[in-house]
Image: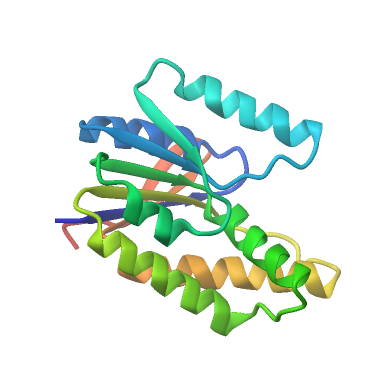
Length: 182
């Protein structure tokens, strides 16, 4: 039976470290799906730091920027999958759509979230997704950034509704917004 945890929080809140620790407590074969594209030296440094954090902790890591549902369906040997992060996934989906002059809006993010949720339901173990809570700060000054903020918020909402557990990490402290016992 599949279980699904969504971990959210702000930048540098400790959400990824929390998700790693929680997934490691699950036991079994673990797979880390990274959604981050390497786009500049700063991002390369961030990716390297995250890889070092997982080093020696029995994680199999793969990179998938867009097709999370299909990748999850391929992971027959894993009992635990950690996807980090959905915020970059939304960015990647928006970018790929723009490259082929396609619209990517509310309908598209809902369809992608539903595909991911269906794959999570099919997965026989535990899936944990990390995402950013991007809508708590200043309203972005341009339309594209506002659209991105809105689509990330919608994605988070769709997934949280179906998650067994939703954890908000703030200042390194995990706060249960939705627990398995609710």
